[in-house]
Length: 345
Ligand code: SAM
Image (tube, rainbow, N blue to C red; front, side, top):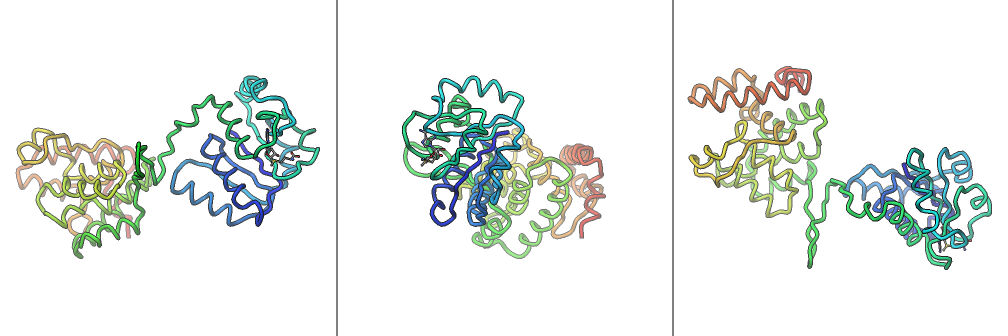
């Protein structure tokens, strides 16, 4: 674990620079930042970035830095222009922190002499005055040998790299998902149905390690295509609506693969759908598809009732796939999905 210890922060004067120290800490691979002065606005800003862009980065302000630095069980680094050049020590520090935590202290104005004395390493990024932001970025980049730059965060917002322009795909939260439905003029029946599917899918999701953000968006949006057609093609139509609104591919796939327990490529051809497999693959895709199977209109029904409906239409293979999916998810939850459903109010 790597913690950055930011000292000498004055909320009014250093607002922007400490924000940048925190953002650099997160983006260049540190796990947390401790800031000496209490600053709720800073905490809120950074927590919002984490919520949107992902990862588990933590911020704490109002920390007694001297005590924290003195008592830290691990390797203590002080970044200072007076120290030893980073390139002469970075391999040694990397080796020593293989099984140990590291704290990296960065100052604001004058850094008290205690910091130099308590540190295991006083490290310079060039023996020239510059800034805590640049020093920290270069130190972390040398430490991780550049690998931190390609770390995947799986946030709510994910930037799609472009030669020109800006392209951000996102996972809509509950409010944004409902807004998308209303903007497409979803009627009352669709709204009531997706809300019940959402409740059931979230209840199933909570007993697995599924990403609940994807389940929430996927379940609320799974029938957005019904605003255009009630045919079996509504899943593909819905997926296309969402693709055009820069919705995260993982949510789009939930929507596209939610019908029955999926549609094979052969079945898709017969149904006149674009020829490809629509079988749910990820845990989130499976949960939303099955929650939808267990909701008729705005009512939760049992697995047996669902299977009966399909068997009566001679769709035996689909019924069998639904049963298998139900078994798989019930096993994951260590609980029958019918029982999970019966506990929902
Ligand atoms: N004059 C201050 C002092 O007594 O340390 C330094 C002020 S500087 C604007 C703020 C922070 O930037 C320092 O505490 C240090 O962490 C970092 N810093 C600036 N230049 C650095 C360098 N060449 N190498 C490492 N860190 C540096």
